[in-house]
Length: 132
Image 1: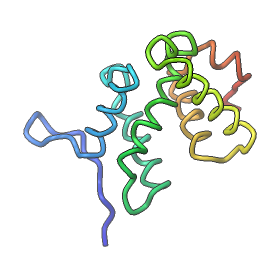
Image 2 (image 1 turned 90 degrees about the vertical axis):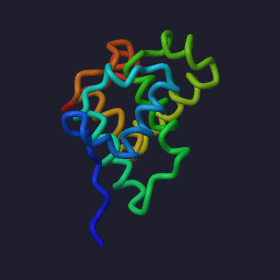
Image 3 (image 1 turned 135 degrees about the vertical axis):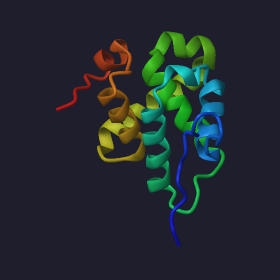
Image 4 (image 1 turned 180 degrees about the vertical axis):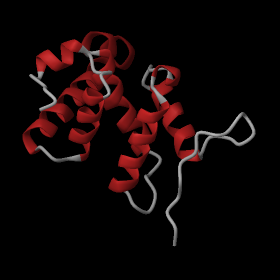
């Protein structure tokens, strides 16, 4: 069986695929406007999710991914204003765990954000991140 494909749409005639619509909604929920994220980055995120959950990413995975991604972009202070202290602590714990384990799904999200040059300078400094 062929894998499900993500689609950005075409000239307004064909709509965005469901996974990209779910990601856009989750980004809004994490106080990150989807228009601020390049489509190529969003496609990479949904493809990483498909690798992580080959059958179908569960609906609760989108907000989880969006919160980590949003933290990486916004930085701790801006993220906390929108997502609260507990949301910030959860995102920070996920980054720390990702750095300890190395090759995890969360580590891939952080690394992709770093490579896309969307990551907050404060996050890079706080966790001593580099794209070596």
